[in-house]
Structures are given as C-alpha cells and as structure tokens.
Amino acid sequence: MLTIAVDGTSSSGKGIVCSRLAQKLGVVHFDTGAIYRALGVYVLDNNIDPNNQSQVENSLDKINIVLNHKDGEQITILNGEDVSQKIRLNQISDICSIIAPYPKCREYVLNIQRDSAKKFDLIMEGRDITSHVLPNAKFRFFLDADIDVRANRRHSELLSKGQNISLADVKADLIERDRRDRERPVSPLILTEGTMYIDNSNMTIDEEVDLLYKIIKGE
Image (cartoon, rainbow, N blue to C red):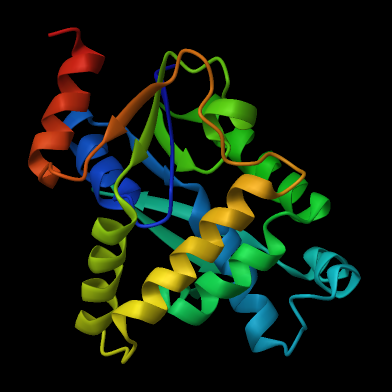
C-alpha cells in the first residue's frame, strides 16, 4: 500500500494540497481533521460542554462517523447526515482544538485512521500522522507557513463563507491553536526525524502539489 503522511500547522494548506495531490496520484485523500470536526459537530448540536472531558468521552458510543471518498474528495457522514460543510465552521474549529487532546477521542479517531490505511492507497493529513498514526509511512511531510500568511489565508476563507471576523481575531485564534497543538500532552504536533519540512509561505498551491508529486515519483 502507498501511504503518504502529512502533518502541519493550522491553515498551512494541508487540505487543498493533499486533495489535489490525491487526485493527481489517484489515491484516497484522508482528512483526519474531519473526524475530529465531526465529533465537534456532535458536541455542539447536543449542547455538550467541550471543556467537560468526561461528557465528551462518554458521548463517543453514540457517534458513528463514516468517511466516503468520491473523485478525490472526502465526504463526512455523522450519524447518517452529511456534515462536510458544517465541519468547516470556525466555531467547530475552536471546539476541536479543545477536545482533540482527550485520550478516548484520540483512540476513537486512531482506530478509524489505521483501519483505513490497511484498505487504501492514501494521503493522510492531520497533526500527529508522521509521529504517531503512520510513523513508518513511505513519504512523510510537514507543511508550514509564516503566521501572517496563514492568518490571511484563513481570514479570506472565512470571509468567502460569509463569516464576519477580523484578521486580528483570526491570527490570535491560530496562535492559540498552534500552542494547544504543540503543548498537548498526548501526540503533540512535532517535526519528526526523517520528515520533510516544507515552508509554503511563498508557494502557490500548484507549485506545492508539483513539488510533492515529483518527490513521491522520484523525479
């Protein structure tokens, strides 16, 4: 099986880059964050306090998440409902950054991840893919960009979706999410030995996709 592991900071372009690369390679694009975001949707819709770890973890047996793939795109189904759009709300991102470190949540997601890696040639993206989920993947990448570049990207994305939020608030939110990702006690975001670090601050999406494709193909 071809396994490509990709980690990176928030708004570093992992999603769009991995989606296009998956299409180019003809493999499945597995967005790990979508699973956590689906959990976040359940927490929000059921009025569960994301800061209450026991409440969140006790709800897991009521959650069924299915990831379907069509033409390189991932469709996220939560308890029979397509939540592929809802999981991208900024409010869901905030909830995810709180619940992601909870051990039982991570175990729930890990089981889905490793099961999928046994079934498909895939690109899997997240925060701990190279370090914990698929440490032996043939190709491992860490995507990053300057904080101001990432803030502008995220701000533009949110505005395009009709969400009214200031650039300063977006930047502050990203800084806090970076801190949580890097300082959490379980599977923090780290650059592992042997993983290729790519700063895409000054790269277009097409340039980055072409770069990764050539590395994978040995060109």
